[in-house]
Image (cartoon, rainbow, N blue to C red; front, side, top):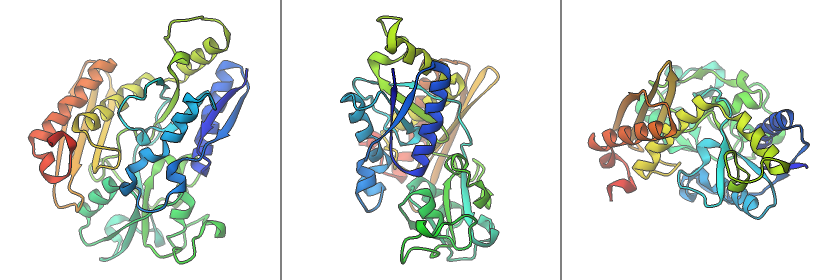
Length: 333
């Protein structure tokens, strides 16, 4: 049996999919191959938030799974819509890496050092809103492109390759903000000039975590034969799952789901387990950075149900504090 891993063809997607494939192969003892899937987000141009957010990278991968063009799909968990996908299951969330956002600026500058009017690029309304809250005097620019293309827009960063530069859009920004996890996975942490603490910028729900998705029939815990290729894949997927990561991202995504906010909304959330408690903090921002509401809570209910309830409770606190008044949330309609 060869297990086919569906992936986007970007450098970051290929890298993280290959890492997941290697782990599956090592645990399951079966050969793996990557299957390149072109998504709507790879084809269309324009603002990511106007296209519906990072979820545009997901639909084609899910279709490939349902059509049996691949057996497993590897997603950045922050890209996954919170709604259920009939016939599919998130079978594993491997151990999470760095959740922080990172500033990559010219001349080694930190956020406080950037001059007034400095151009800072990001494709995320969440990052843009929190940047504007921290530094209202910055010019926050909406950008698209893969990691190398974005880094190429900042002059002088180590490792910028000429082939990654876009004519007219290279070296035109003072800084970009990217996920530390993605930079780590493609060995580009050397370009980071500052890691943002969660007091400055709460990450996207699920940031730093991968989601390994499969057809529900192939997922761990499903009734059916324990032997054969499906059983071997299910056991390998179960072995890759990290329970603390699963609890944390479940709580974070429950905030989004209760707010009925898409993955492009200016909402940040971060949960982590410490001892017998699961802690969660979340923020909803006005897109222009002028207002925000932030709430936090903890639970000793260390189950997926307990984590989900924690996320719902924090979302209710945000709504009670006026979150729906500062940004467009479907939960308020």
